Structures are given as structure tokens and as C-alpha cells.
Length: 396
Ligand SMILES: *[C@@H]1O[C@H](CO)[C@@H](O)[C@H](O)[C@H]1NC(C)=O
Ligand SMILES: *[C@@H]1O[C@H](CO)[C@@H](O)[C@H](O)[C@H]1NC(C)=O
Ligand SMILES: *[C@@H]1O[C@H](CO)[C@@H](O)[C@H](O)[C@H]1NC(C)=O
Ligand SMILES: *[C@@H]1O[C@H](CO)[C@@H](O)[C@H](O)[C@H]1NC(C)=O
Ligand SMILES: *[C@@H]1O[C@H](CO)[C@@H](O)[C@H](O)[C@H]1NC(C)=O
Ligand SMILES: *[C@@H]1O[C@H](CO)[C@@H](O)[C@H](O)[C@H]1NC(C)=O
Ligand SMILES: *[C@@H]1O[C@H](CO)[C@@H](O)[C@H](O)[C@H]1NC(C)=O
Image 1 (cartoon, rainbow, N blue to C red):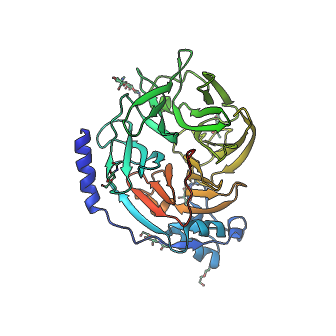
Image 2: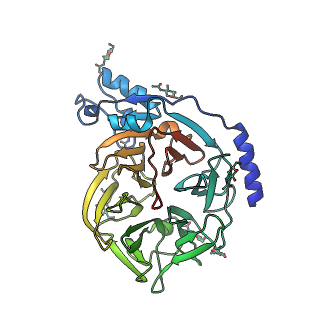
Image 3: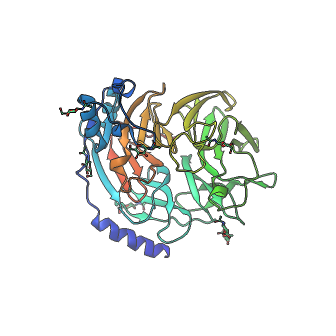
């Protein structure tokens, strides 16, 4: 199916999409109920917190109500983010293909979100876009191959996308001009050795210094898309001025580095670790790693220092990660999009159960579009109007 067919397909799907008025409830759960329950409670990591069975009482009723609520609040700060009556709108889908999965890159000034997902009937994962004005979904025309596209971010007018490549074409990090589709490879080799599969990318700056950080992980090989991994998994730092590509975080610190994000002001670097044998497997797994977020300080040379464990996912793995304008950390996890303050406290959750049509699929990523949250819900895309501006870029 060519780009034109895809456009027609989406246009058709769009005509049937309706503004969603169901499942838009807000349920507030006292935060105490997240850490102390009647001791005969029963749950496990393959269920969600709201599925926890507790002896009769208010907790159980609240959890039951929360099962189908889109917004689960544990803190007044989350209530302030969503406002008193949050509005949710289905922008695209549902389709029978997982077209909206990773990245989630808002392009300021154009009211566009770029993302990555499966092509309608093509193999692999491609770069896609949604126009937030008319909800048209399309495949931007790029000037170089981007093969099994994954994470991405926006920096100074360009969209940066990571891709795994295939057996004969090296993956790497590309910079794309969103106006022209002009695509340039920045990094795809370490002295002639292929990267395993760059997964996500983010830029940071301090004074005159600029550095691009990206995660490199062996999922492409596990998915049989490339040959065996040739390098240890790592977080890499590319300095375009010094023309230096260096690994800065080893696999002994983060075993399966995945999502990566910086705080406004570029003082902190957050990385998700997804150390499961199956990429979307659930539970603690047989590994010494944790399904966790780690935080580093970025020192004056933009070097990550002072690793701390920031959070552990209650359900599934933390995948996509973004830091909002006020320094709060949002991650795509088994529970949904989980929002934490910079101290690591969970403030609230956008519930995966109501956002995903296929309850067994995995909500990996999302975008901040100023005061809207764009949810890449696998076979559909939601827009949630928030009561605060959460998005930021280096230009604002
Ligand atoms: C978790 O609990 C559910 C419901 O009781 C059960 O079906 C499932 O097998 C349990 N999973 C694990 C990993 O124990
Ligand atoms: C819950 O309440 C029902 C009805 O009052 C009762 O039959 C049941 O035993 C209670 N369950 C527990 C765990 O207390
Ligand atoms: C949640 O929604 C599902 C599907 O519509 C429904 O079957 C279930 O009864 C609802 N649960 C509650 C607690 O309302
Ligand atoms: C988005 O859609 C609007 C309305 O159709 C259109 O005016 C605008 O040019 C589109 N934006 C882009 C970047 O194509
Ligand atoms: C890898 O991708 C390149 C560029 O799209 C293509 O020409 C080549 O046939 C692909 N190789 C394999 C083994 O699929
Ligand atoms: C991996 O991919 C190769 C080439 O596409 C194929 O020949 C092989 O059967 C695949 N291996 C597995 C285990 O699926
Ligand atoms: C975990 O994996 C190691 C290495 O493959 C194996 O020796 C060990 O038995 C496994 N443990 C469990 C609990 O599965």
C-alpha cells in the first residue's frame, strides 16, 4: 500500500471516529491506600493496582470505580494538571493495526505530532505524523531509509529519530527537517561496528555545549531484525562540536536502556530500564536489573553523574519517558501513563485500561502538545486537554 492508499485509509477511518464521551471519569484514591491495605489483599504484577482485591470497604469500591476511569488521582497536583473536567477526544482510529506506538514528537508552530508505528500493511515501524488541526494521519516522505523507527525528540527545528536498521542497513540516529523531509544520519557506527539498535534520543545543552544522548539496546537482534548484538548495551553521548561519540553509561548500570529524557534546564537525565527477556513481558523476570527509571545529574560538561534509582514500575516496564515543563516525570507503563513529581512520588495515572482498545497491548509513549497530552494508544490516538501547559522545547 503506497502513501496515497494509506491516506485514504486513514481518511475513511477518521469519518467513523467519534468524540469519546465514555470512560472519562476521574477517581481519586487516597495515597495512603497505595502503601497500606487490609493485609488480606490479593493482587500480582500481571494485574493492575485497580484489580487488587481487598476485604469489603471503601478501598475496594474506589478501586472498582477506578478500573474504568481514565484519570486516577493520588495527589492534588495531578488534579491540577487535568483540571476539574478533563476533555478527551479520539483523534484517529481505532484501526486494526498498531500504527501509533513510539516517539511522540510535537513540532511547535506546525501543530503536528510525529510518531512511529506499523505501516498499514508494510513490515516494520515507520515514521508517521498526525495533524492536530484536521487529524489527518500520514507518512512524511523522508530522503533516507528509516528502518524500524523507534524513539524520537525535537531539538532546534529538527526531529531526531532512532532506528534499528535491518541486516544489511545499519540503524542509527537521524535528523529530519519536518518541513522538507530532508533526512541526515548523525551516528550509525562505532569504528565500523554496528550499534545494536538505537532506541531513543534526547539533546541537552549547557552554555556553548551541546550533547545528544541515545540509548542502544539489543532488542533488534532479539526480534530477529538484525544480526547478533556487536556492542554491549549502553547509553551513548554524541558531541557534534568535538565530533566525539562515547558510551557514557554501561550495561552494568542500566541493562536494557530504553526511553531517555532531560529536565527543563538540562540538569537531569532520566533513563528507563526494561530488563526483561521478552520486550513486553510483565513482572520482575529473571534478571538482576529492574523495570525502573534511573536519574543522573548532568554536570557542567554534560556528563551524567550520580546515578539514583528514581522509580520502579508497579506493572510492566517503564518505556517512553518525558519530563514536563514543571519537572514532573511521565512514563508509559503497564498501568498507563504514570505521572510522578521529581521526588519520585506518583501523582496520578492516565489509565491504560480505558485508553487501550486491546487491553493486552502496551502503552509505550505519548507526546506533550503544549497543554494537550497526545496518547499513542497503539491502534488509536487520543488527545486529552489538560488544565496546564506541560510541553516545552529548547526554543521556548
Ligand atoms: C495474577 O492473578 C490473576 C487473577 O487471580 C491470575 O489469573 C494470574 O495467573 C496471576 N498471575 C501471576 C503471575 O501470578
Ligand atoms: C463482604 O460483604 C459481604 C456481604 O456483606 C459478605 O457476605 C462477605 O463475607 C464480605 N467479605 C469479606 C471479605 O469481608
Ligand atoms: C468496566 O468496563 C467493562 C467494559 O465496559 C465492564 O464490563 C465492567 O463491568 C466495568 N467495571 C466496572 C467496575 O464498572
Ligand atoms: C493541518 O491541517 C490544517 C487544516 O486542514 C491545514 O491548514 C494545515 O496546513 C495542516 N498542517 C500541515 C503541517 O500540513
Ligand atoms: C534493508 O533496508 C534497505 C533500505 O531500505 C533495503 O534496500 C534492503 O533491501 C534491506 N535489507 C534487508 C535484508 O531487508
Ligand atoms: C530470522 O530471520 C531470518 C531472515 O529473515 C530467517 O531466515 C530466520 O528463520 C529467522 N529466525 C527465526 C528464529 O525466526
Ligand atoms: C535465571 O537464569 C539463569 C541463567 O540462565 C538460570 O541459571 C536460573 O536457573 C534462572 N532462574 C530462574 C528462577 O528462572
